[in-house]
Image (cartoon, rainbow, N blue to C red; front, side):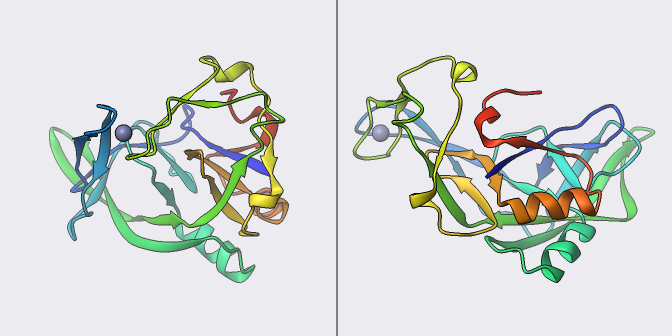
Length: 204
Ligand SMILES: [Zn+2]
């Protein structure tokens, strides 16, 4: 599979935060870890845009939270080609600061996608283990601190065959099928790098 690495370069705008989508922390009674919990996104939520002039198809997000924000063009390509593994959660307007005031950017909106597809690592092949797993909250530590030295490998037995997936053991990582990677290339969808799955931990 392929890793989707969404990043803002100098050319593209990015979302600094989603206003109207807050979070809180719960302390696990079992292990004492502080786990983030996201509160429901409000009806009036919007994306606060910073940097750049051009709006990419995959919008980089500078705040906490596992969100995927895509342009209407991405939805159109995904729907036309029956890409699976997500549902559209919300359509969000974008605002940016202009002369000290927040102003809505006309004609631009992003869709928040909830990625439902699942696949997991082949930890044995990666020589990686989970340590100090908590029975209550499920949190754990990796046996290697610097994951950037690890070649990632997905276990296709754990793949639910969705075109768009989150990695179960590391849900911040988004991966896609070859079909999806091809569609992104063919349609020149911007704002995303497609990496081999093994390079998932290496930021470009
Ligand atoms: Zn815990």
